[in-house]
Length: 465
Image 1: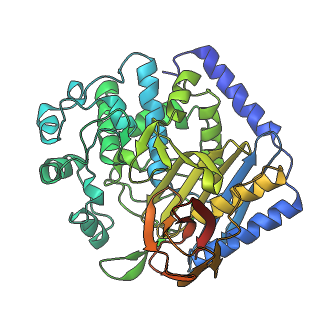
Image 2: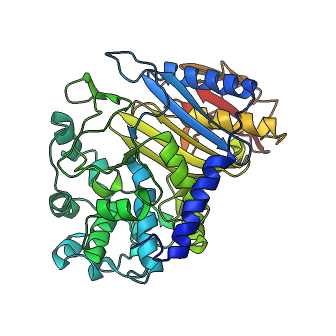
């Protein structure tokens, strides 16, 4: 079976890949290379990641890969840019694409309840299991809890005790779901991110196609697109093929820094088991958005991110993709992120600058968040796009900061610190001419300081390092 069971589309796909490969031969100006390299080196260093990889394609203009750091801490070999890494939840974009292909071919309906495809025993232990639909699994509106994210769960403890332990997701769901209340009833618009929905989607794909979800993704995306550096390891395979960037992280059980390059993928399963590299991810994302894998109406449904995450007001979910829309920081991104032990990956399309940006840090604790905001602002400035303006009356010192900040210029009201996703992470009362706020407990990233005075608001960007 071809991607769309259509030989003509397969031929057009091959031609499109060839044209995309040949179209971008030009390099960016040296000033662009140097500026982004400085951003990347700084962010990797202050976040203590051993390595970082970045690719930006400015559509129709230039494409370039940046590297910072080393492949591993034993040989200290400088990164070359072609190394593989585990992409974590970016795998959800691959799986969602395949589910929508099955919908397009008439094998599945978005309105099918999960009980049509999953065993009654499993559906019965899922809160609201008999009413949850395939659509709600795709855009995280099922209301299902996530056993992996449950702070009282022993699942992650078991992983960190033995990163090669073979989990059974059915057993996890049967044992943990009865203990976990849903976050909310199934909804059309209220999203709560969960890996569980994509475990179930993997099982549905396997039931419908009579093949492993990994085989289906391989036959319908990886092989047709020629993604020779992309692979879905088998249940028993913990390896990653060379060349690869080692992924490091603090093991909370042993309190020792571990190399998590080799790990069991039985826990992430269909929600996060793929490894790839910059070039392959770029080929996949471009062909997906250009309608070369599934028809454009389904691509539009992936990007039609209307399901709102109440905990993160600037995030909106579609089918296997989400949108970060936050005007105070000038952000409008489509794509996904992926965190897995040892690695953190971002892959977004930025419509304001018509660019694909893919980045991986070799540490789950690190994040390309600030780097992405810097890249967005820099590329917008090159094109003369005016970014959001700060209120000059509101002063923050120091900025960036890691400990306490001093806020002046506002004498009454309240101050809110708002993160990249629109969530208020700190709220304090303004105390006279000078307000001191301790930001040491905040995660590194770009924030907005919003002062509510009663007569209006004042806004200013702030960076926590």
